[in-house]
Image (cartoon, rainbow, N blue to C red; front, side):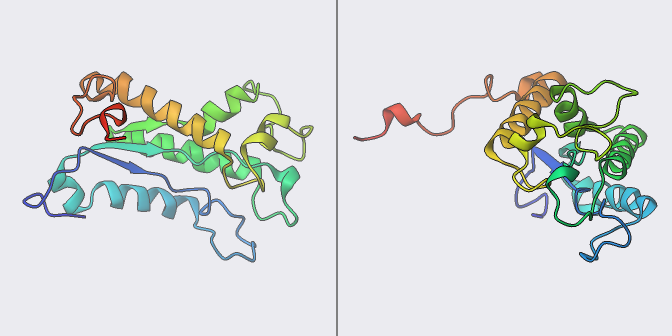
Length: 179
């Protein structure tokens, strides 16, 4: 991260949790206990270089997973939800903005509170999650589109003056480029 005297960060996103939410017994060894995950998010946001930059911070919840696509169960929908909930809680505790990607995806998948989670073995296979996640975890282009749309909405809702639509062009647009 640059020093404040070198450059100024306008925004900073923190998008952790998908790997942290591995099950403790997972052979990937990526599991981070939930309390440690929350402490890590707080440490990142509170790091002296981050604080010195005063960026607009956006915590992004880990997205849902699709257990139906896994060869070996290293993650579950329910366990991943706990990490999304924790991310939301940390954002609230720290007074920073959260982009709730988990909820954005689940609501688009048709999930309602109290129902089995799409992506869970308890629920039938979700065609929508299959379109978003090519292996049950990693994004397809459609998932990146959801992330992009939610990011633009988050910026516009929280910092309307920073919305890309309202920002002046720094370089000429592509239509002005030499042909």
